[in-house]
Image 1 (tube, rainbow, N blue to C red):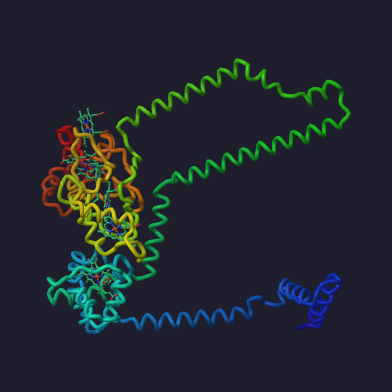
Image 2: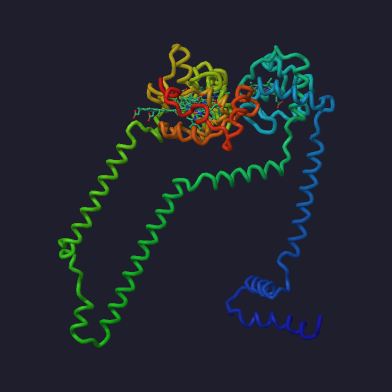
Length: 460
Ligand code: HEC
Ligand code: HEC
Ligand code: HEC
Ligand code: HEC
Ligand code: HEC
Ligand code: HEC
């Protein structure tokens, strides 16, 4: 440290004291001194805190590492690819509607089950959880208390099935957390850009614009009044003064021809637009979202709990109609789930399901999508053969509390898609011949090329 520097460091606090008011307390002095030193880069704010922070970070990282390595699956569970693949098939057929591997769903996340209990115990729980719970096994009883839903028994599963299941549960579909995060981030960004500006934002933007306009008007008004005042103070000829302070004659404006013409034109345009909109929407029910007899939420069931659409809409892949589930399908789960979040008693909405089952009466859901009788639409043709996602036609159902008709469902809508959509011919023997015949054409095979525009295909 050079001599001058020392001097300046010493003089700095002195300078500080000079600047402080006589009534400042000692704490205030200390604080000001510190701030001054920091501002002159003489004391780093981070120098001490920084060390403590990095120690904490290291400790946390260490614990995380230990945690990960301690969380290794039971070595008794096979990790061969065949076992995992076979297990996945059994899982998808029997368990998927209630379980995910790494996330809580209707039932607990399954990975690590063989760490929490022995493999044999897990197997007997899968086979017949009711018996295990009835036997008083503390772990099983606690689990049941938490989820309040008895898992169906799976006595039909063979020992091989069970072993494969465990392999899949412990080793299957492992996600690299970094990659998963990248995928979700990418997906969200894609969704945000792909969807255009959502209508809520438009409303906000419009609101802001109106606000800005009003502000501009206010400012203009202020400027005018200031200017008027200023001019009035000047020495002006009488004529000019009169001009400056004259009041606007609104009555005259309202009576003028120009004003009447403009207003009439506006009114006519407005009436015409309303009438046209009305005409257009005859028979078009886009956006229709009627209240339903039970507050059934797709956002909860298909979104949060990720129950597959096909679990309830059993017809989509096999027939014309998707089917609305009968109360019996609800009862697969709601015999046991009687309320949300483990609350006591039966939720009034779920009580309605019980009433329907007891009285053997269907729940009278209000139909949302409805084509006129003259048109024929077949779900399996589009979902199973065409490979089209439900969301392409029905929108983000898994986010809807109340189902809303997303598409126009007009003839133009059907035909537009048939003109544009290529047929998923790959792996479909039925189309091989067609593709061959079509191969000299440059365009890809579209739905229109297989008769998707013929009147008789859609009209009886
Ligand atoms: C109808 C929903 C449902 C189905 C289907 C289902 N489970 Fe479960 N499972 C649960 C619930 C709920 C629990 C929590 C325990 C309880 O409440 O009995 C559970 C618990 C478990 C547990 C214990 C988890 C732990 O943390 O120790 C295992 C293992 C398990 N299930 C495996 C399976 C397998 C394998 C299948 C398919 C063959 C399956 N489950 C099918 C609902 C289901
Ligand atoms: C747990 C059962 C269940 C699941 C899972 C489910 N739905 Fe539904 N869905 C229903 C019920 C019940 C109705 C009738 C009540 C209503 O409209 O909300 C319905 C209605 C609909 C309708 C409107 C039917 C009409 O009246 O025109 C569409 C479209 C639909 N679901 C699509 C889907 C899609 C797509 C998924 C998967 C992302 C899905 N559903 C998952 C039970 C289910
Ligand atoms: C595969 C299992 C499953 C099926 C099938 C199922 N649900 Fe559910 N349902 C759930 C779960 C899980 C919850 C949420 C419980 C919680 O939050 O604790 C729930 C919650 C509800 C709620 C909310 C209750 C409240 O008070 O807010 C209603 C209503 C409901 N379901 C109606 C239905 C209807 C109607 C059907 C049949 C069309 C059905 N569910 C089919 C699993 C299912
Ligand atoms: C190509 C467009 C398209 C796709 C893809 C599609 N739907 Fe539909 N869906 C429709 C049309 C159109 C109707 C109205 C049918 C009618 O009124 O005859 C409908 C009606 C429904 C209904 C009311 C009941 C019925 O069968 O009429 C449900 C439920 C439904 N769809 C569920 C689904 C589910 C679940 C999927 C995905 C597995 C799906 N849809 C895929 C166009 C589609
Ligand atoms: C999102 C795109 C899409 C929409 C919307 C759509 N379709 Fe299709 N449609 C397809 C595809 C793809 C196929 C071809 C499926 C296949 O591979 O056979 C198809 C096939 C058909 C076929 C069979 C054609 C044939 O020659 O075999 C009929 C009938 C049909 N659609 C009716 C309709 C009706 C009615 C509507 C409107 C209510 C509709 N589609 C809306 C995509 C769509
Ligand atoms: C891809 C399927 C499809 C094809 C191909 C198709 N239509 Fe349609 N058509 C529909 C649907 C769906 C409706 C019902 C639309 C609605 O309710 O708004 C409809 C409605 C109609 C209507 C009644 C209009 C109304 O306002 O009620 C007429 C007429 C009609 N179509 C004639 C034809 C003729 C003629 C052809 C052949 C050139 C044809 N359609 C081809 C799907 C189709």
